[in-house]
Image 1 (cartoon, rainbow, N blue to C red):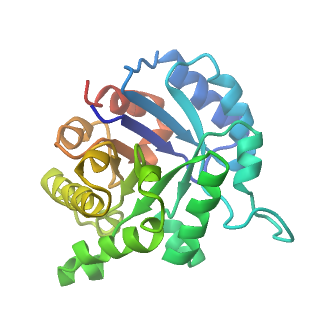
Image 2: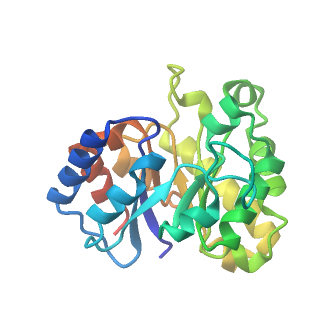
Amino acid sequence: MRTQIAAANWKMNLSIEQAESLTDQLIAGEIHTSAHQLVLLAVPFPYLLTVKNKISKQSGVYVAAQNCASTTNGAYTGEVSAEMLKGMGISYVIIGHSERREYYHENNQILAAKVNMALEYGVQPVFCCGEPLSVREAGTQNSYVETQLKESLFHLDKEKLRHFIIAYEPIWAIGTGKTATSDQAQDMHAHIRKVIADYVGGEIADTVSILYGGSVKAANAAEIFGKKDVDGGLVGGASLVASEFNVIINSLKQ
């Protein structure tokens, strides 16, 4: 079975005291993962080591960064490099989140460079893709997401995509009042896997974990995760509530 992943994205939330309390609550909820399951906590940069130390005895639970720079080092005030993440023992990083694309104008070429940096230093990217409302309404979402994948990932050696992690975000269904169904999630996930299979072959494509990032909650996680090509979720607001996120973790495919 492909690796099933519950990834929390705390975004720019929580004081250090709140971050410590949330981590303690998650641990107290007794996170249990099978051999094919992972829990990722993508926390703000200042909290990486604090949370990493708190979960050090938790099997299958890892800290992730929410971003990294597209360059190795230099005069880039405020940036954090993949080399720095590696030095801190951080094994995962979110790249290309819709908010980074929209607010910080990160295009597919910039994200390709970030993917390269992360892989060079042994940090596993969680690569985000997804279409806005205008694209969904035009019915061109498949080609839009395919372009994101091709321009940011398809320069890689095929073996580097083995066990890769991709997160699909239906941006049109986040905070718009519109709702994405589990069937719509499955349709796009299947399309993403086919696009990857066309590049690397079905055997490698079937090892890629594709997460769903469309307002996953405790109430809908089991239905969404039950779809054939959905391998877990990239969870925003619900990950800030320990009881909610623990239910989401337990909703992963067994």
